[in-house]
Image 1 (cartoon, rainbow, N blue to C red):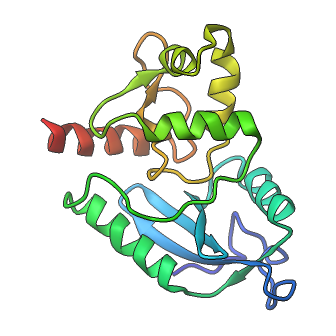
Image 2 (cartoon, helix red, strand yellow):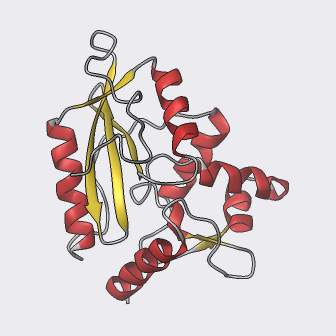
Length: 190
């Protein structure tokens, strides 16, 4: 486990106490593609994101503001279950996740994230196809922005979205992590 003050989550971001019971309990989880920060709020997973992503502070601010909660480093049954299921996924023993989720974002972002959850394991879609599934082919850029704002990586599979020409584009964990996730899934789905 890494020191949260090192990079990404700053020293002032993780507090010793939350605002009463309104807190996001967080833990860290090392994957083959990098370290994830996991967060649970009121028995639901609200965070499974790349710890050192470019927009880390933006995502954390949105979650704290919308949930009116502070981050507190504490383990929970849900976070243990999340680590177990992620371990099974990376160990090629799990294709779907069975965890209660709290998607924190605008109504449009939530629609995009729900649509992402319908993209089957081992398949990909383009941003245009995702926009079409939402009934608005003019929303490609908004869909891409919502995809990039996803705070529950892997479980809400934003890595399954490709550019219009089929290229790997933009991923919070980096393109190498995206390629590795898709390779893992293609191998198992094959």
